[in-house]
Length: 284
Image (tube, rainbow, N blue to C red):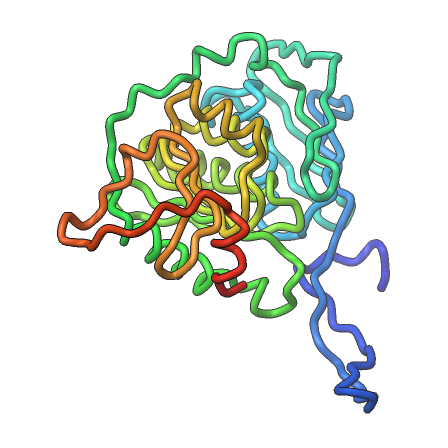
């Protein structure tokens, strides 16, 4: 592939698929990955390893969630140049970027400047919103239905935001943390605040995923897989409901379970204390 060509989310590749011991030639899409650098006021800010999809939203969402902008009004210039794998940003007024960077647990080595870690209590949510269990199950089904890049090539994470008014935003990327940046970026572009919404992800809920959700004002965060211990601890402090191992009819609620409304007519079920029991009996 010509490195100067405009990158695409997927790339066609020829490879060999084995069925048993029989080799079969295949020509199919695989997920693309690019190194994408953001320059802020002429200086390199960050380099993403990411999917070439919704790059504008990725940049804007990252700037917002790192506290470098508060709204689109703070951005005086944004130029996305996919061919050169870079973005140029100019902001209104001087911006001081913290020197200390934190390597996050993101799949592709995400970076956060960690601006909020010393003042985390300010993001404690006061939301009293509750959500039915059936909404969680239905939204996870919707996540899979809207995962267009995943259906084309696999190899990506998908996150979905459902706002309290029912509107939906979907983002896909090789890095699960990038999907939340893209969702926040889309909300900024479309002037649709995500506050009080529901976010579900195909990837693990780690501490940086939880903190990004808190900054967005999201009271319920869930995944088809597990949260980390630190994510659950943060969620308990920040009044966020964290859900893991969401399947068509089962899920684990790790914090603030009062937000999830069950059916009062549902029969009593025995308590499962070992999450491995849930994983063993649930489809992948």
